Length: 390
Ligand code: PLP
Image (cartoon, rainbow, N blue to C red; front, side, top):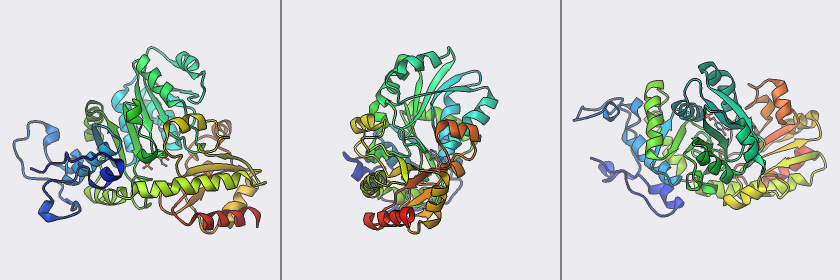
């Protein structure tokens, strides 16, 4: 039997070695791809012990799940076929029809549409709250119902880069017996580890930073063994598991997470400061800027402010012109890869929301979101300067 319990003291080392199969499989230095749907039967006592890809128990799954749990300082993790599979399965496994959840006011558009359109069809309702409001706990209490079971937030919200009072969220959840779930995609475990703060479940779109190369779709749910087992039970039946080939690619990408994110933190901070000084820019959203409302929380809880930022131009025409003129950064959806991307969230990640809802949230046509890559910072800033002023 292979052993996957290897774990080290630091995140940098865990990203490379935690969960490494012991002994090495046929002496291989990296985990080989186990492209086998099924395995010889043994003395399995439970259904999920039967070895089968959908049950997320190949050596590729075991290695990567142990590594991701170690990265977030948690007990357990479960890979999923996408970030949305992680989010929807985590929520549905902890909330049933007739129950209610509290959610952050702005969320990734897919999560918001899932809650508005799909969870509501299953009889699961939600109320959005302002998690950045220091007086929030009182308004959060007003949003509670006897059926409230869960609170869902993002560490850094997509696309406005809000950072809430996350310590208060954990305390509130504990005080009211709610399961606390946080999407840590934008912050990454390099900058913030929510399980250490007391969140029950951490979800990621591993498509983004964890992989870092814009060439796969994957997700992960991380937390205590009990909470993750509950998600696993539902995932087995909903079927959103990850295939071993993609596990292999994700394991490879994950090894350089700390190097990539450190560089992206630095470049994003420089780009945010540059943008703040541009006359055609109305506002920059970046948790590392003192002008950002979430800065006070981010400064206390995060070790870096991330590679994502967004900014409002003076009008939608200028935003369109910027996207046409920018040459180094690529005009494309998604984020978290090694190449810089620029996009208008109103035309991509939040296109599924009604226009009125987008306007009310501030996701307007003059808003541009940037996913900072690992290019030379000066060259990237020069490209932005040309596109804004040329
Ligand atoms: N969470 C956040 C913050 C995202 O930005 C995204 C996608 O953009 C998702 C979740 C969904 O991830 P996936 O596309 O892997 O399903």
